[in-house]
Length: 341
Ligand SMILES: Nc1ncnc2c1ncn2[C@@H]1O[C@H](COP(=O)(O)OP(=O)(O)OP(=O)(O)O)[C@@H](O)[C@H]1O
Ligand SMILES: [Mg+2]
Image (cartoon, rainbow, N blue to C red; front, side, top):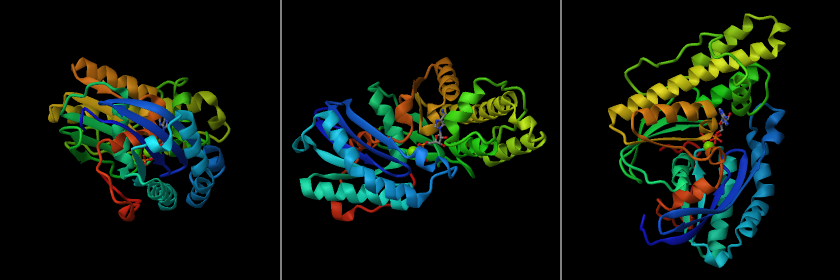
């Protein structure tokens, strides 16, 4: 990225159940969020216990233009001063992605702006640049979200290499499923972590899946099943106990955090990392943030994580990623629900 750029990007995000638009300015290498609007459909999908793709897409169609309009108004940026439009083109739900991509293409054509096709996972990573802190390479980055749990090696700010992934459930998915089986609600991550604060993390001895393995991969489906089996030992009446549920949540969260910390630190040592980054929706988890930060600092490495509201899906991270991405002709923009890093 050139040091002399002074550009404003309109970011658009619609990969799952958040309709989001943001304006991000880059002044000679310093990022400034001018507006960041996120409209969450959580309340709409709550009664189904998860995101219903058809309903998500219909709501994106309803909301995407008002949300973009609101972001433009909040930023006070005239569209003639926008230097490009960035949109998440995958991974995600295909019908949701299509709404964002079609909108971005139409605006790019009408306004005659370059368009940037952004990988949603890369955007989670580039959310770290919104902190405006110097980043030393190599960096090991943990992306931990609703659909992914991956370790990425960054040799510089554009060279990314995936070094591991989850073999089954993502960590966020495990939080959501544990919440569902304890009948706590959706989305599970924030609810389970709030319950965990009032529970005893040593109450249940849950497994730390693959923590001793030689590779950096993850697995969370067995841990989720262990919580299920532990809960089945109690009668439905006993399971209503707040204390019992809080203990299950705290013990589960502790197991997830320990595995994420151990694998990330192991990878950081192996690759001689100078920086550890943490991003994705589960990075909003306070215990994970504190645990990884403490360990990173003890090792004398730099620790970076976005503000919690920039960890979960948002369009500021999509706009940030555009500063590291080449534009694509609008005719060639395609969505890919399975896009990987
Ligand atoms: N405080 C928290 N603790 C644990 N998990 C959390 C917390 N806050 C959010 N999450 C989890 O983060 C996930 C949502 O993250 P995000 O919005 O990045 O996922 P996604 O966009 O659906 O998936 P992906 O980014 O992999 O495509 C959910 O699984 C949610 O439960
Ligand atoms: Mg996400």
